[in-house]
Image (cartoon, rainbow, N blue to C red; front, side, top):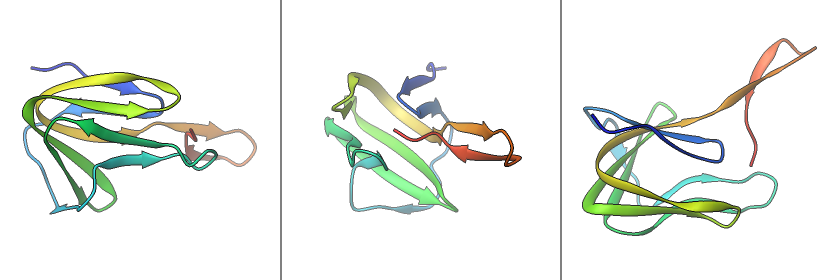
Length: 100
């Protein structure tokens, strides 16, 4: 089994199956503060979405996930679920996505 990987607030978790509809871009997340994007810049890959969850299929032997504020991350061939980390809001009694 492949290992989980992380870039900023994104966790890239290996999974068995890809779900949802294929998207026409290679952006996994866009920073709310800076507008910088976590995107596949090299290699062949596809992104799918189902009920707000993103899935990544790396078709080539390796793909690179890039973001201007983070080290480039090499992702091997396979299927992955993309998870955005959340943080607890003290006083508001709720969780929110971590912002990049």
